[in-house]
Amino acid sequence: MMTNQDIINTTVIYVKQTLSGSESGHNWFHIERVWRNAKLIAASEQVDLLVVELAALLHDIADSKFHDGDENIGPSTAKTFLATLPVDAGIATHVVNIVTHISFKGGNHEKGFYSPELAVVQDADRLDAIGAIGIARAFHYGGYKNREIYDPAIAPDLHMTKEAYKNSQAPTINHFYEKLLLLKDRMNTVTGKQLTLQRHVFMENYLQQFYSEWNGEL
Image (cartoon, rainbow, N blue to C red; front, side):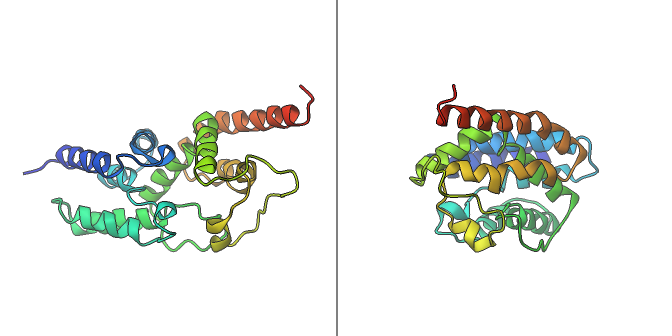
């Protein structure tokens, strides 16, 4: 009979194999960091740790950004995999719901599901989107999508619909204002909020340095 640790170990192997060769901002190392963050945050929360760990490991198993915008492929892939594990149906459904609802998607849409476990995993994922690693991931993905680094003529849009956010081709610097700098105030947990502070300041300092160099002031 598989223990919870066996279930986690099996999931780790599956995720590593599935995401082999993925874009490096959304590969196994991203998953591993989110998994580690989730366990750290969960230590201060009343949550089902198995649900948290499974959701953290599976949250980007088939990111819609790399599947023609298909928002069903991630949850369905997670559901299919979970069906191979000896986990309670309620746990599997909970994990799939987290995978379905974890994404930022512009932040201007109704949230159809909430649980303390979602709050933990969402915070863990958002932590990896900010700070030094978050900056590196943003520019890497921008390059992957052949986006401009910065264009002073294109202002950030803070009121995009979910569809507009998903289809945006704006320069990467705009992404700081449309998502990354907003995350500090959208964290769910006390621990998550505390962990964002230094990373948020780092991003603000980075932008100040960026504009100084862009404008020839340094």
